[in-house]
Image (cartoon, rainbow, N blue to C red; front, side, top):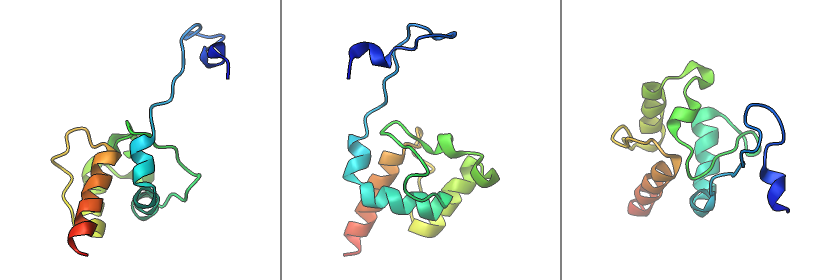
Length: 105
């Protein structure tokens, strides 16, 4: 892919470069991510795009849920409290889910 293929060609952002955030952390927890997105937001794989920078804040409004509703559903489904995560990054949540699942094995 050429370097200039990522540059916006017109509009108010003309000349700006578009770069997608890394997904390496998401890939580490791919199975957890897919299950989480289905159980919390009812999104099937392919219906969403998440990166290592994605957070719960990106999904407020889905089914009219606010952040507190999403955190409550996570607590109900996974038995973990994520309200202390200031960024609400999904990768951090997936780490907690993984740790919780590892403890119960």
